[in-house]
Each structure stands twice: as structure tokens, then as C-alpha cells.
Amino acid sequence: ISSVAECENSLFKVSYKDILSAADASGIEVGDIILSVDGEVVRRVDNVAIIYEKPTVDLVVLRQGKEVAITANTVSPHETNTRRYLKWAGLYIQEPHVTTYRTSTKIYSTAYNSYYEFGSPGQLAPVPGGGFITELNDEKVETIDDLVRILRKLKVDNSEFNAAVAAGNLGRQVTMVPGCDVKVKLINCDGEVFIRRFRTDDHYKPAWQMVRGSGIDAKWTWEYI
Image (cartoon, rainbow, N blue to C red; front, side):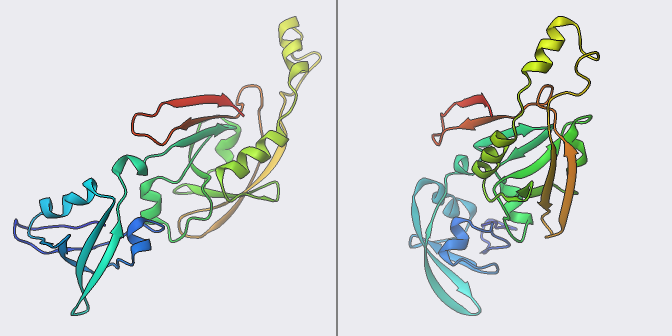
């Protein structure tokens, strides 16, 4: 819920809501004016801020001239942070961040390509404004787990390449770094579909991920994919 108060005794209106959010699931609608929270009349932002202290709150909102009672679940701010992040072929891929839920009309997958590394194979893949990876080599991607599963199948043995490097024979025995040709389907926040093709680089741009636990004090763990 986003609300704006022009002065200390103002009404608070829902100007937008994140899709797939607690507000969305509770039936709160854009344009609702929040009259009370847990029985307390809302006059200033302090009256709304108590939502961060409780798992659920009882709201009374004004909607199209009628008062509507709603019980809404709340989400602690730290729970909306990114908790999984991976890098593959120079692409930065993560769970959709909060802004993505506000700007996209639909979450097409939880594997969101937010940026890329200059000079990497993945520089050929990004779409304007970032994009959801929905297919990799014609296999459906709905979650980051789906993407990781496919990436593990595509992983190429680079032992021959490493041996050539160690022996100083790179360029004589091996002329191409280990990798494979891939086709990626992405959809941006406006619903536009893009198909990108490139060759991965499993030696210089291997796939790895970082995962953070659910607690506010949870640590990050790192691993190769």
C-alpha cells in the first residue's frame, strides 16, 4: 500500500499496490481511503505504521462511498528483499524485486534478468528494462529452480580446456572455451517477448548462485551451479 498525506490530519488513499502482495490477496483496491486501522481512526502516518508490528490488521476503508471492512495480512519489510541471486554467462538473475511487482502487469517467472556484465556472452540477452526468463532452449522456466535445473544439464566439462591452459597449449590444442549455444526467451514488464541466442562461457563466466535464509539476520551462502 502506498499512501500520501499532505498534512498531519489527512486521509490516506491507496495509490497503488504490488501484484501478488498481501494487500492484493486481502482485497484492498487502488482508490480505497483508509479510515481506521484496528479500530483507531487514521489521522496521521503513525496510525498506519502499526501494520509493521502485527501479522494481521483490521481495516475499514471507504470505497465508492461505502465503508468496507477488511482483514489484511502484513509483511515485514525485510521479507520483501531479494533472497536468491545468480549469475550465468554474465547475466544477473534474481527473484523479482519489489519495484518489479509495481511496474509489471504480470510476474511471468521468478527468474528475473536485472542486468548484465559488459563483454560477457549474456550482453546479447538483456531486454529494455529487464526481463523475465520464461524459456531456456525451449524448456519452460517458471522459477529460479527451473533455471538452475536446466543450467546444470547444460554444464560442459572443461577439464580439457584447463589442461591445455596448464600446459601452455591454449590456442594450439583448444581454440574455443567450453560452453554451448543457447536460446533464451524473455518477457519484459510490458509483456513484450524477446528471443536471444548466444554461446555460453563455462570457464570465464561460470554459473553460480547466492542464497539467503528467511530470518532478518540470515547469512548469504555461495555455490557453483
